[in-house]
Length: 456
Image (cartoon, rainbow, N blue to C red; front, side, top):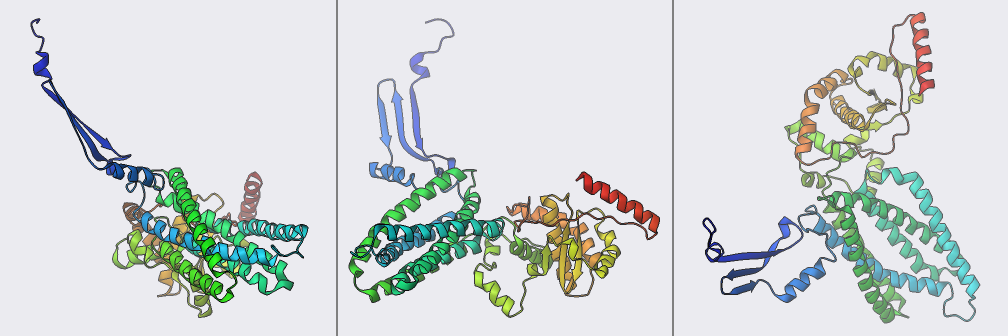
């Protein structure tokens, strides 16, 4: 043995290697330990084979790294969502059986071409309805994902109810079938759009694709289970109309309850009209920012709630603020009021107009997403101060100068996304110029404005 060379046996008297399984640090677990000495090798395994098989099976239905790769509200939402999906597929067997009977399946007098034509009209109506719904409401689905999620499932319930009613009104079969298909087409658009928004919310580890894929696996399992139970229920209740209706209505009530619980469990960190209003109210009262879980408990998620409030003429604070107002609706007195308060919006890409108890926000054509968020918060502050006195532009401006940056910083600390406001599509924007009252200067400014407009 040469000088300076270590004794091999002494240098490697023993070595231990541990095996850890899992896809992320939060989910790792020790599965085996191997220890080797100069003369032997020992190994010790942890956990049972069935436990390892169960983990592999679970991995087909939950995102990689679960639960550390998703938000805390993921489990409760998926649990209720799976239950409502199961209810939907069971009822689908009942409604489909009724619909097929209505179009003449199993009757000698029915023709193939007649049934095909009726089914074609049904599908065509649904396709056209989906296009129209996406055109009119597509830009609003992000801002009220919770409400539209409930609306989507309610429309699906309505569509199934139409299918179940179809045999009772044979003379109006085509109309009922088309109305049911139209209702379900709204469901497809609203459900798909809100699902995309919720997937982004759940993706803590930028794993939206994985979450979406596993959501598909969960839905497939629920579909297969629901179809099996639905076929059994359809067979048992065949020929017993009363039992069919009792089963269908009971499952529908459970479906609506499960949907409500699923949506209620969500704690979204994006800013829409109502969440921003709730957060600002708390900050102005107590100088504190609520957590997403606290805000979630105060949100109004039932779609008919706003209808009843309008009937009773009760408005929430954010409903007093109108974002993206049309400049062409301004009157002479409005223009004079804007000129009077212009000093408060010198460096802003928006201006506010208080009119008839509401705040109208005019967005500049060069405004960006952060300007829109700031303008809406400014509008909420002004609307809140207006409840105490008539015009409070100066106080609102002062609050924005002193408190706005602090408010945004605290929102970020609580995990809120402050890059943009989830709002309806802002179609109308504006461009404005201020100047002295003499006619010569006014003419020059108007000419510059026309040149600027032609360039844009």
